[in-house]
Length: 325
Image (cartoon, rainbow, N blue to C red; front, side):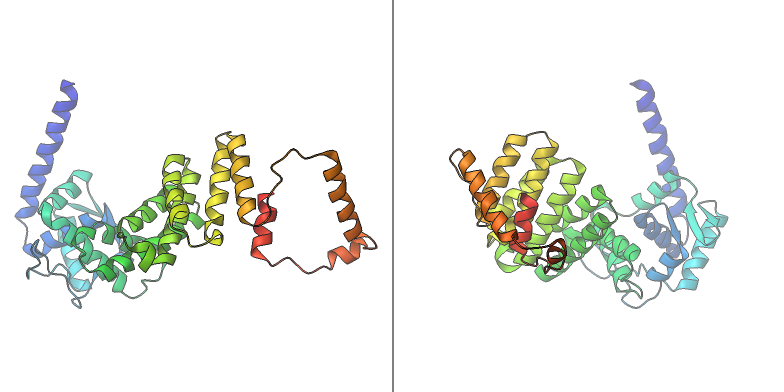
């Protein structure tokens, strides 16, 4: 409606005005504001230290040619941020700097040419990941988000595979934290980095990405996306053992959708693959009594203590068979 259009125009005009204000600042301050805008609405001291320093300093141009450095020493970064606070562009709360308004962040980000933004994100991600302490989970997430925003500028296949591995790590960590939508976004990004030869050249990585993505989407209730991932696993898995997790996910998903007949059919098919097929004909009372008799003979003379002292089952196939039952 008219009110919405007018509101958008006012917002766009405000961003344009702020962009003009920022563009009149010294080049170093502009660069620092652009870099923070790439990271989000705020930056704390620990993140500042990750992106500080001239070693491996990024130089950005859309054609890959040499441009100006986008990284500065810590003291220089803080100096630029303090000047931005004085200019009313940032607020400083304790050791955290935050854009005074989201439109200021938009204005700073818009000063980066659209065809260069991916390069900024890519180089920021590389800088964060190669900095000290990059093994921390928070830093892993931060680096991978930035690297994913710059994938269009990653040309080397091995670099894509390495980023796919980082997305898998991030996705698994997010699943462990019960952050399933976040996990799905990382895992989907990792899958997009794979090529048509992935199942042949990077089988374990590809299988794990599709398994974890299917699990995340199952937990998100996005069963259609889950099924697409499972189809890939069933089409390319080398053996039944590599399909077991996919079988369980399909059974659970069908159960969650109250499709019990289909869930049972999938379960029976899985048991057959595991070497424990169910009879295809009607099960008679005599067959049931025969199995009870065999079980009774196996337990004959065994006390409760004897049963408790039996070795723990460690056959993965048998364990999964019991789970399916």
